[in-house]
Length: 172
Image (cartoon, rainbow, N blue to C red; front, side, top):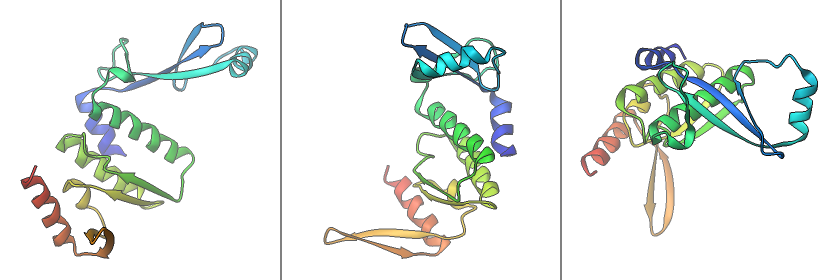
């Protein structure tokens, strides 16, 4: 967790906020962690809740961007930050991630791999990847092969997993 936080903080500070659209069309905005001093207002908002959006700042400034305007890698980091924050508060026994590192640069792939490794002390993580960084801390490796339209899954050695992702990178 500290590695991703350190990686993100050396490049930028991330602030998440959400805005809630009410049936009346009015929009309210709350920074995550901010608490309303008016419980009746919160109850009214819950009764008339229509949707929510996420706004992000990667600079630590007051200007935020809607999540729809972010790059694929930035959206991935926001989603993973949210998942890992929830995991700290209400952990699940296992997580299944499918190519979460596809849109990330090498620095962020390493940070995510280290975070998953740290969090794997209390939960099981199953990930699929075509990148080497997630393999570095993994304990088990499986290869999937297709023969006659049937998929077969076999446990493979770490070296074979690295060879596979290196071959895949050479072909792209």
